Length: 258
Image 1 (spheres, helix red, strand yellow):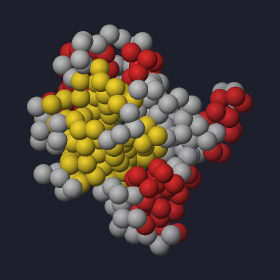
Image 2 (cartoon, helix red, strand yellow; image 1 turned 180 degrees about the vertical axis):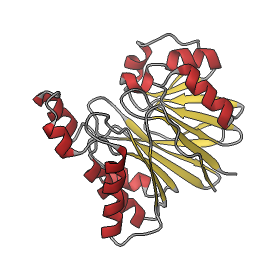
Image 3 (cartoon, rainbow, N blue to C red; image 1 turned 135 degrees about the horizontal axis):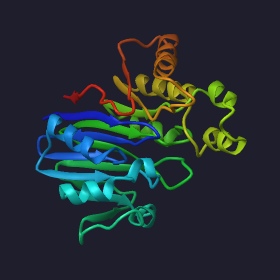
């Protein structure tokens, strides 16, 4: 039994990641257009059990969860520190909204292991396990500290944030000094260089496939993010690593971790 993984939407316009076994399908966040996500599910397939897992309460990650959950009878799992903020965005049926703590929990046949990441609201990453296989997800984090690297180093595939190029961000005249400071802080978003450094560490630990996610439309572009990570791997003497960039409104390749 494998785990199928695909980014459906990625970036400030909306985020949604598909992860599935034959029995269980999870969406990590749902800030993407509902009809588009439903079409993706028809194309990719879904298990008998369907759930949405929330990383944090920002609108580009939760904006369409209430509508999607209601239309598709999906359970919604949310960390207890984000629960009040998420529930303010829409109503849920009785028993549909489930709070979790920092402890691991099962959804169908997939084990979800949440871990805290540094952001300006409570936020978690996840490691998902099924059949001895592991997929890690960490977006919207200011830095990848030792605990983050430790969690993700056990994975076969990792989705990780490569949000901005620091030079492009600092030169952006449309962004206020406050906004630049927020993004560059340890509770903001990971730069291409910070992502590349994390990827090198994770590749050394055995991770073979990466998806770079949550790219800024204003302060980054896919070729730059990809080149930054690939150059870092080459300079570290690490070869044979797969790297793809997740785009807004476009699905990535569908990966089946076996």
